[in-house]
Image (cartoon, rainbow, N blue to C red; front, side, top):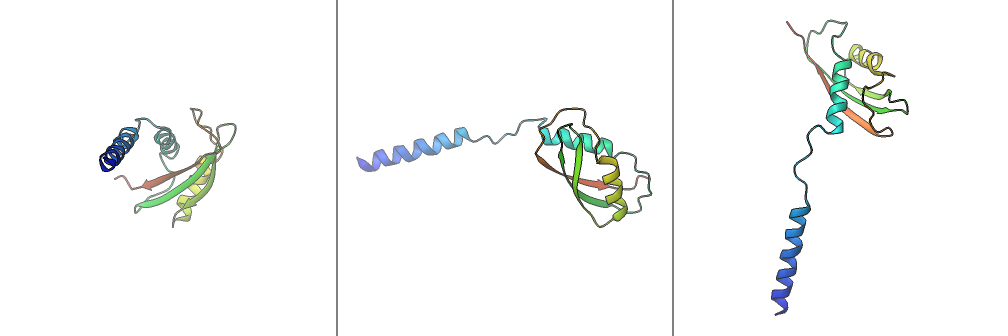
Amino acid sequence: MKRVKLLLLVLALTFANVLMANTNPKKGTEPSLVAKEIYALLDNPNFQINKELLASVTFTLNEENEIVVLTVDTDSSVLENYIKNRLNYNKLSQKFGNRKIYKVPVRMVSVE
């Protein structure tokens, strides 16, 4: 009898955990909206792109909803300066939570 009760308890806990798990993320979440605004700000670079350029941008938002670039992880100093100049202290159109740290991958390719 104890085994049956224990088995039922284990099954109930397992079933409850499966029901509580949220495996479907919400569409249009905050990080994707932030990324779209970042990509819009980085559109139309003012330098020639000969090969694919990759960067990882880490930033936060201040109280005025302005972007504060913390780091730009890339091999290209031209891309690093471009990202910092375009993003630093630009305001976002929507209010997002400040004191959060965002990380956005950036990939630039030549369009011919």
